[in-house]
Length: 519
Image (cartoon, rainbow, N blue to C red):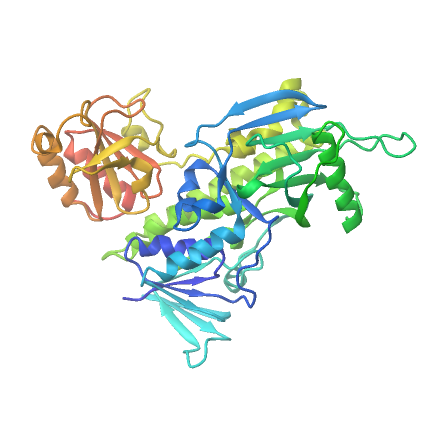
């Protein structure tokens, strides 16, 4: 069996290799970096709930933190507050911790071959696969590798994208930020906060310092990350200027006093807005930074890359089955490029409003101007929601007022046919999930309902589907009446809400969804 070749061993490339292994698909990861994992305390990532499962890798929990809530303040006055449940809180962690956990996880699969160093210099597509030509390989290894597909996860300067001749239009440095990671110095409330026009101390001689805007996001172990947007015209930030910015901010957060603190890391980074013109050419695809760049106003590039992985892995696995799934692979590019494109447009529209440079601000109320900067952090609106995918034939497969298709599923308690109980989101990333709403299922002994009502026929229908699927039962699902069969894609998107007794509707749905013959 030919493996999938993955160019790039960053978080997206490693996550794709791990996701493919969960479908039994082998892969070869080409690591062209000489650096390995770079440990930077101020280089962190935020994982919203729909990709939070990536923070549950073994050995990673102690490196993560969830936030108890959110505050937006202007001149010290709270203009917006939110309380997070643990299930709905974003997860904040150092990016190097995620990468190290992924390295460990792929090493345990037995299905992932890691080549390092291995630099891709050319590729050839054939009717049945792809050949990757390498410049550098481990001693004694072949200078070329064959695979069923090749996925470019090789960063913003992607070699794969360049070999395909794909344009990467967009804008450079739409925002610049100074960042710092420190231990101590910030009141430990467990909340993340955006402080605009933070009260600042008076300098020597009585001149008031320019009040900064700062984003405060807790990390594990009493560490916190601070982000300051930089004016477009500001000169390069010197270490002394950044240190002064840290101290002014801490004084503003602590009633005029500079508390003890330990500065762990600092930096300056630019946010770019770019979107590859197309993401697929035959058996070669793009994902992560190779396909898109986001990051301004709290949008999360790593999270978008992991959404690419969740969307692509199961589709690659399906395309490797007899007969292939051409339409399914094309839907990856359509769905993910559309979602990221919408995010980039939202940033372009919001930036002039938030930074006071005109734009659509005239159509926003005063409060809307104040709360818009929090949208990405709160998972709200076009800046923050994970995006809804268009599902083939979806209007035929949900009743009016029923669950909204194409969105991430709502997490509910489920019971498997062997009686095992758990949460729906914990079963994602593997087979297609078919969830029957059956009131009382959690209080009945599984032996009683497994052979009753719709279950025997449903179990037979599931066994006959053209790709792996698992039948689950839940007491209830928001918007779904009793005996509704929910079709949940491996990436956690709700694909259909069908009458549980309609076997033909299920077969049509899966046929449309997978582009594979059914029945």
